[in-house]
Length: 319
Image 1 (cartoon, rainbow, N blue to C red):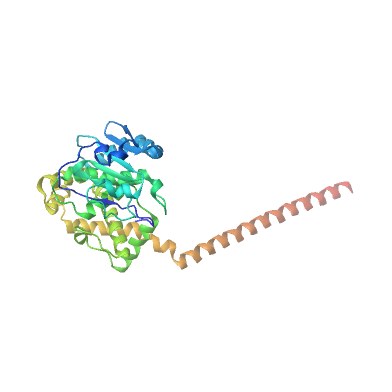
Image 2 (image 1 turned 120 degrees about the horizontal axis):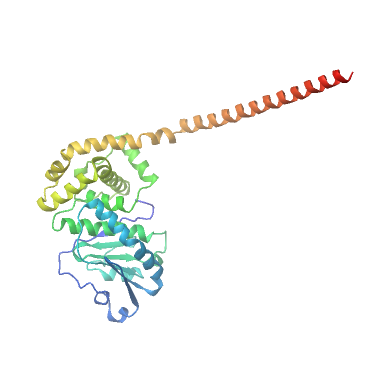
């Protein structure tokens, strides 16, 4: 989780599907202010002032979709509607049940409606958001939600995959995991299935753990294993059984392997960032500079000696 929170609100609404036409979602007086652009799998609806953002998303959306579906392993029909809300008030009004949405939220996903609502970057008064990052995060929720349909989605799976697909990894998250791993404060994955902690530091740790566990499943266990897991889980609704059948390991065994993977990845951080390491590095730099300067001085003295020797020889020959 960065200083400006990009983790977004995910709503798995169970009510009737809304029509996928933007004017039906806003007041009639506002509908004429919006435009639409479409690609093979998306419809982008936006106000004129957000056209640059819409153009950027339109250019990249299909590639993002292809990448995320390649990781999940399941495609789905229909076009995803992406609405860019020009103000926070519009953002809160567009989606059902979103009047409570916090001011820091950058987007919301409605998998059962195949609908994404993004907050315009212009509507962010403090901080900065990358609309493509938020879009990738939200579309991951869409793709996973549709793949799993009515199957409960563990929070570590939903948020970990969304962060992984949005490339939301930072050095700060590495440090959070390092401190937790070295102090024995890592949160068991089963505790991250229904929700994340409310306290800020613990919540950041939960997001970081979820990201790295998904990275472990896809990159170390293999994308085919992840595909089998998602497909099996979508059919059986049995999380532990699906992981065992896909990976050949229980959740606890996977978690143990992941912990080893995590410690290998983060164990070098304290070595490189400790005060001792910094002083040692500074000493090496100083020593290198001193030796190089001394070597240059020796070369200079040798050069002078050779010149003096040549001059003495020349004087001897002349006399």
